[in-house]
Amino acid sequence: MTELFLAELRRSWIQLLRYSTEAIAGIVITTVVFYGLFLSAQYMAGPNLQFGERLDSVIIGYVLWTLALFIMTDIAGNLQREAQTGTLEQLFISPYSATQVFLTRAIASLSIQLTLLAGILGTIMLLTGSRLSFPLAVLPAFITVLLGAYGLAFAMGSLSLLLKQVQQLLGIFQFALLFLLAVPSESWTGSLKLLGLLLPMAPGAGLLRQVMAQGQPLQPIPLLLAMVNGALYLTFGLVMFRLAERETKRRGKLGGY
Amino acid sequence: MQILEAQTLKKSYPVKGQAVLAVRDVSLNIAAGEVLAFLGPNGAGKTTTIKMIAGLILPDAGWVRIAGRNPHQDAKALRSLGAVLEGNRNLYWRLTAAENLEYFGVLRGLSRRVARQRGQTLLERFELTEKRKTVVQALSRGMQQKLAIAVALIHDPQLLLLDEPTLGLDVEATQTVKTLVREIAAEGRAILLTTHQLDIAEELSDRVAIINQGKIVAEEPTAELIRQFSGTAYTVELEAELDGDRLQKIEALGAVVQAHTVIVRDPALLYHVLDILKPLPLVKVEKDRANLTDIFLTLTQAHPGLPPDLND
Image (cartoon, rainbow over all chains, first blue to last red; front, side):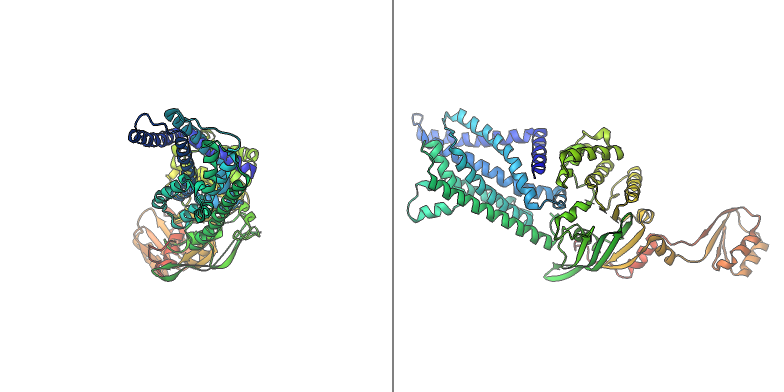
């Protein structure tokens, strides 16, 4: 598996660097969209208003949304692209299972997503004057968001295998993602709080906002709940993917587009 | 030793709410070093059968064994399988030739070091060393196809599936691929070859299986199949037309004369005819020999193929 992971790492980095204009365009567009929103908000609020920690929270939500979108597009989009270009079936003629191949791929391309994200985050902070802190405590909360994102990405990948055309679905889904990552579920109370715990990625995103924007320490119980949430969504995504693979093979539509 | 064993494979697809049988009870075996040409019109069930063998389509019934393992149940079976499916679309176009070989080598279970070594050897063997650092999209169609075959061989599989390996290639590239297929089979690998170029199938295959409407309608050693469909008559071609005396004698024997050609239906009469013709200059003496195209058309035209919209 280590060999496969390293091979996937090399493959994805080589393709990214060889066609780096696409990555740079991605960073520029994502940053410009945020900066446009930021300027509009500033215009409406007047020049003297300081956004402070609220701005930091919004930035975290936006950047997480970008990451989740990258991850989602990565698996579902790759499956669709490879079905079109004809390499998909070669991936299934491997002693590694498709789940192993795509999970290894997803982890390998995470290094790319994080690099792009660092570029976007750095530029946004430079443009808006935001001062986010990055304590180590951020890491476990971040991992819970990643687990959830990969779970959803595999679920979308399953749809991509079965339906082939998921572009429109991905387009609609990105707004649901924005809601999940930007909604302040950590401040909800009563039955809404329970709902917040069940939503994918929302508990982890809430923890990140508390630690990075509000400077609060990481609480063990909410972290545990966020971990369970992430693990459950990942399991759900992987199980869906396995079922979709079998169903696609039964329908004889693996390589079709 | 049998490398591929496929037994009574069945597959149906829903078409307009009804299940249409695309493959019915197809059984195929290929031994080490043998090339089986798997022929059939569009929509006859070739691709579905190949993909069931490769573990890419689940059969409704029947089983497949590659080197004794079932690819649908045991992923290790796929270590013994290499495949070039549907033309040139088996490679990453943004990676170089060497990068593709290394990546697919690891994907097939090799270590990076071994994948690199084998990749280098294959590049040399396939005369692609100069192009090792060229991205696939900049290679010619023939080179892409050679590379796809090299990639399919990277993990030294015992069974190679080649789906239309010469489609869209120019004459020179076709010759190269033909030579490679011969060499690969001579190494002891079993090869399943599909092609619509029947002259290539005739040249390369040891055995032929013809599928029509999802059923195997003929499966024989190539030479035997051709012999069965060949006649016993001889054709003698002359440089000039016959004179009246010889013409009379030959027609009296029962042979047919058409301009410069004499057709001898009874082989026992051949030498009598040749005696009469002596010492006239001959162009050639040829026994009637069916070709695979005639045989294919005879066997498939009796039952025209399925509607073209059905995936084959």
